[in-house]
Image (cartoon, rainbow over all chains, first blue to last red; front, side, top):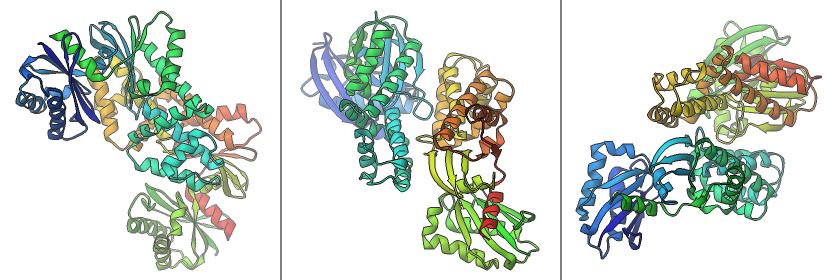
Length: 304
Length: 304
């Protein structure tokens, strides 16, 4: 039997998928954060190895003939300390082929389509559109991080919801589903009267946590939008405008893959983006990406 | 002789002005950061006392009949530890009247006009518009901090300039005055060719510093706008749109006072804002605020 290994390694979890060359699932494992940008190198290696060990359960690691690890910041593997730490761990698990690091953007694209050329639009914690030519990322739009951009990302959605709630608290009691749920999530209560203090407390609490954590409020936008909350729907529409503009900056032809936790997990944002793409790019096929480890396994099969 | 003391206490400096009731200057002193939000309480008190001591030089502190300290976050003085630390230091300098803490927004307004009712628009590191009735702040617009808002502030100007430069670096060599000066300031060099690495380095460097430091790039926007750089002028125009919208949210009648380091220090932003106000509020008098300690001394004279 010829097997391939696909890994999706991120700042939250590491997932490993083993398939046959035809894509039939043979094993799966998951563990904690595996990106050495997010956690210490030794912890990252332990997580990734643990996911691979679970995926290899009952299989012969020598049958794995090709392996790809999708990870943000592949440049880190130019450092032999990082590269060796991972390759030593993989060898200890009995793997006999190298595990090739591939950018998470290219892996997200491969998780949606087998076409070699197309465009991927990702909205997760961040947001980026990337042109893919022969499987490789060429030009990009946005993707410049939460501080400077990532318009339409989970961070952006959470920030818009928080700003709306802060402004509202100064002048009136939040009465919409979105602003009420944001106030309750951040303050633990919904003030009974307009309150400068409550607004200042909300702003203070959000400044006191890592800014990226604003993305945790993004699901509240989706939930409120699903209830028809006009304030949430307006934020969703603006997010979709940003994401469609971002895609249009780099898309030329081929399919468009939608990926990332916001586009795969938020039905209102996904629907609003698909609606815009249908109008602006009527001839384009739009597909939703599967899990990153599936994209990595597909790339591994292609390289086998 | 009857004297009054006005203090402008901030996170960067503390300034003390002593005038007669008519506003004639009698003494001035300055020292380092005096806001206990920014520095330890003991250091804050030392700075403020040092500024007052210098201002009192050659004067009899018993002749000071009224004193106002303009400071952001007057709520801190509800804590007796904070209030007592300051009042003990003032008593040690021979002052026989209490020094009343007043919000920096109300002091900024008083630094521009003697009218009891009007509106103040501040753009410094942050941005806020506030309605003033009988000298007291009533409603506000924006002022919700760099993470959620402060549109048109120094932080916002710096972020727009940085985002523009990051996007440009991915696809071409920066060739405008603004993007060239941002690249040079942040990277120490202007890349000779389009470079993903240079863009990533710029983004990484800005994420590695406290986000507020983006306001340090704001003067580059003003300088480039003064050279006629269309990219800088576009950012200035958007800043002015945000600031004019912010003011319009709360302004009803009376004069408009422009305050804060951006509105007092950036000629292009100030001109663009004044242009918009002349069009949108043709009957309104627009005045530029003087220094905060002047506003505080005026309030002290009114209370005397």
